[in-house]
Amino acid sequence: MGRPKKTLEEALPINWKEVVIKFMKKGASRQEIKAKLDMSNDLFARFLDDEPEFAETIKKGDLLCEAWWEKQGRLNLQNREFNSTLWYMNMRNRFKWKNEQEIVNKNVKTVKHEFTGLEKWFEDKIKDVKTITN
Image (cartoon, rainbow, N blue to C red; front, top):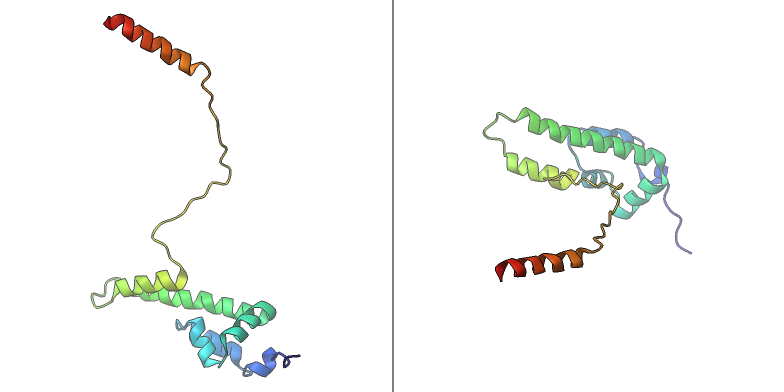
């Protein structure tokens, strides 16, 4: 039998929610939060799955983080010193931005056309051509 699993209260400081929100609203990633709270990847993943309060706080932090990064892009549109390529690559990698949109139509129906007598029609046309050219 393994050791007992840590609870949220045992693993995290009392002010963990404030820490998450404070740093993520300044653009901090989940990885930075794990480091700040001294959490392993496994513990973080388990709390996301098993602790609704933790999961909800991280989701709110994700929203704040992405908003912070979007704001950096918006505020720096006219700034020639701003590295827009680096910013864009960060957005693509961190927030799964894509260059294209994938459109999936799940209501597609396959229509099968049958051309009965098509071979006969071609044979007749070939005969007509042969008759004209002879």
